[in-house]
Image (cartoon, rainbow, N blue to C red; front, side, top):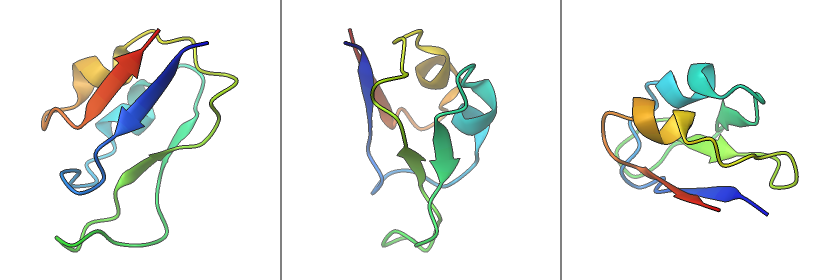
Length: 67
C-alpha cells in the first residue's frame, strides 16, 4: 500500500500538491502550523497510488512518498 507523509511544520500551504494529486486526497488543513500557514494534509491512505505527483510539485520538499 502506498502513502505519503507531509511535514506540516515546513508546509507553507501553497496548494501545488493539492492541485497535482490525481486522486484529490490532499487538502489544506482548517488549522495553521507554527508559521501561520494552513498546511496540506493527506486524507485517504487507502486511495493513494504513490504516483509522486505531489512530491514533484512541492517547492519546499515537505512530502515523502512510500510505496
